[in-house]
Amino acid sequence: MAAAGVRLELFETDLDDHEFALLEAAILHALIHASLSDEDLYPLLVRLWTWRMPPVDWPPQAAAVARRCATALAADATCELETFVYAPTDLSLQATRVAIVTELGLTASDLLAALEHHWQQLAGLEMPVDAGCSLLAFARHVLLEPLVGACALIWSTLETPSTTSSPATSAWDEWSPVDSGAWSAVVAAELSRLGQPTPHVPGDGDAAAELLALARAAVLETRDGQAHVAASIVRTSGWPGAPDLIVPFANRAIELALDRVDDIDPETDNDQLVDTIHDQLMPTEVVLVGWANDPSFGTLSDPGNSARTGREMLHETASCLLSSLAWAAVEVIRATRRTAPPDA
Image (tube, one colour):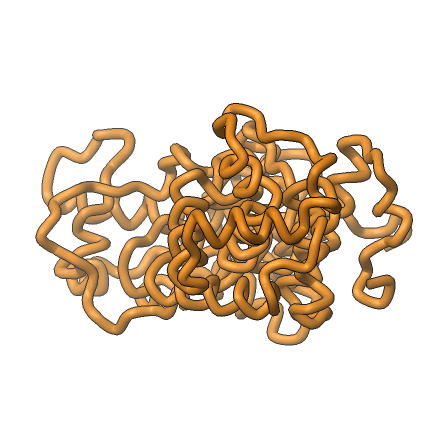
């Protein structure tokens, strides 16, 4: 555990919020980077989820059960996370619970039998809050829920296999890269993908964006860092279709921002530079017309509702998208300057 970055002193009985956040970040980092075996990781995940280590060794090979169920769930869907915390939603937990019960062929009688078998170790644990008042509710709380939580946390770090099918076009919904309705959840998921899971992403959009820019700034210094950051920017752009259309522009935006690194003020929004990069990214109208038949580009909304003609709509659509890429690129380089040593 120490070699994986999990500080042993964080396993004290009582942790304050800051200490628990450190423990959570370390365990999730070990999970994402597979720096511990599943057998070593499983009790840490239970500790993270329940605030205590597994009370008993149940079920047999619990770590393998949790991994199998998480992998099966990830093959069908992405684990949904709460907006403001890195935790699976109730719906995701329910899906995990069903998967585990099915995997084990578990019945209420089986669970109560396990409770009886381990009664001496379990009897002194607290009853669940608002989860029923029966021995079965207690058995679920102390036996099943630790396994459910560990499995859901594993699922939350697994990618759903990408599909080669075209984006659905039957729905005529609009989308916008400036829609921040679930921004904190998007940032939380992306921080985990970048290897810097954060237990509590701020609800404030600017603060969340700052965390994301700092994480990308760290990745930028690694091998193939620019490509990884460009892919990250595309993932958080909201682009609903195949990313091939906009990845080159995200890469170019980073290059342009790097070329102007000395002009980037770490203490301001650098709006003028964002506008400059945006203008350099803008392709010709001939190219934009070729984009118009792309369903994603075609449903990108104009947040200002200022377009009066089809041509204006074409340019406003591109302007909205490319501005978001330029802003994200400048924010990354700005973050590198904020984290640079004073004599850099």
